Length: 328
Image (cartoon, rainbow, N blue to C red; front, side, top):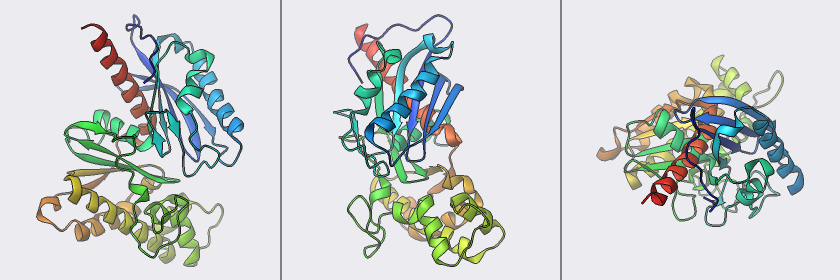
């Protein structure tokens, strides 16, 4: 969090601004302390454009939020960004946004005139999702959980001993870039056979096409899901392969840190049972040790708002911690 001055809560309630930045969209919202989104904005991510174009799009989202009459009630701004991130430096290097390498996102957003005098708190998008699901969603009441975002990429965040666990740099739980196929395809991260290269939306779409699936219109994960619901064999096989890779990663995480639930969100998770039925089947196969046999994979409770709500939760928590410290 920045070292900017923190004001006490404004009369009539507190709001937190939030940004959710990924390879497909840049979303913004104003969020209440109970996790309700009261105002939202969305722009398409110009993922292949230069640095300036990307930052301009982020600033457009901030401008739209700041134009709301509710903006005066905002105490802080939280950012959930595709990673890797580096919390100590406030930088991001998203695999799916090539122009941002060690980009100072926190400082760049903090320099926006509307954000002045408000703390900016950065986190990985999947860590933000984990915070949202633990506070307001499907992981509520669970002390140890893995929360996954399966969308353009695959990310994850950890809840350990009842708290969000970010790790040394903010990347703990970055499940999308563990290898689940030793001889698999090269990944943009530099490794081979990464989970993201099998289970992400673009990856499962490519696999369905390679198996002979032919879309009626746009070829994307939602179209593959629609075909799978009609019994299309290639589409079903693509989802089964993605689910198997996810199950292997989830089971390995459970064996390592003894989570008791896996919460799966993101665009691919919105496919419903065509993903969760094979995921449950494969999870029972891979989570074989007695201490992980109880493990369940469930849909995220906050849906597409999870990244925004979680970024707000983390920023709100940082503000409260700072206020508590200053009152001692």
